[in-house]
Image 1 (cartoon, rainbow, N blue to C red):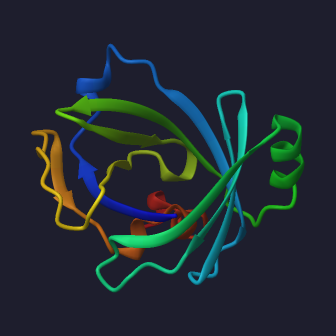
Image 2: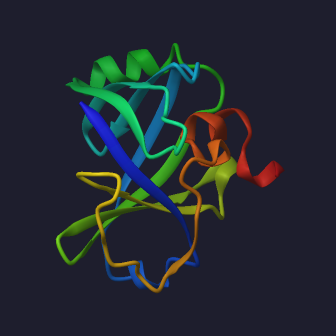
Length: 154
């Protein structure tokens, strides 16, 4: 149940214009870095996720996720801390990896982050030309941080 993930800033969404994304709404019941608890609605599905503290590199952390009903997710979002995240997620296959590209809306409008999940911390992958820079381990780009410190206020 370990998640190994790298995060990158994206130049723009031009390369996504012919792709369909899924709208995601998510809120946090806890933003404590040692035990973040997130409730998410993705399309017509609900999820609850618990994430542990990241390693020093920011690459790896414990993650547990369970699908819940949309009604349960909506009810839990009512309990969420202020600062619900609103974004559209696109999936882009490059070689044998799926990149998740999030275009944020609302108070995080203008922010575009791409994430890639890996099997090992030193796994190699192709870096697409739409990447600006890596932000893995930078807590400002965690969704839990963005829920309290919106991108438009930076």
